[in-house]
Figure 1 (tube, rainbow, N blue to C red):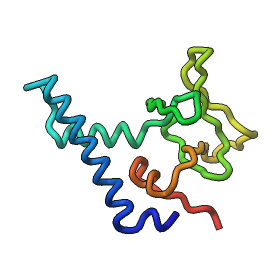
Figure 2: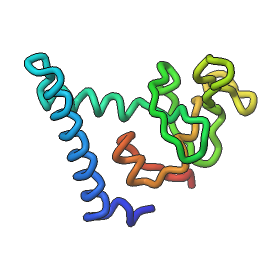
Figure 3: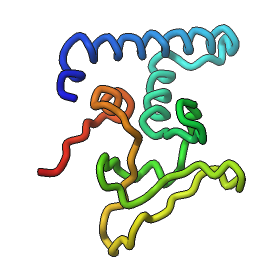
Length: 133
């Protein structure tokens, strides 16, 4: 995991992410014209959405980014989360959070953000996972 945070690997991924955002901003500007947000406002909003979103897909390999108000406040735990977040396509509820065990009052609620490497966690959520000693 640590190697994925070293020099060129992370820098290349960050540059690709920035280039993609630049393309999206340019496309929006072509459509919205004078009403377009500045690059600064657009990149700030994109960072807010990317760092607060999760995956609502119900098929492995699919991607369906979505915002989960309140649920996005739960921190990541890579090995023993105490809450499961799940897309409920058939119920049209969209997304549910279910405790995986009894959670004592005052204990932090945690979910697993997915099987993400540290570089992805850093680029999308501004953090890396370090297992408890």
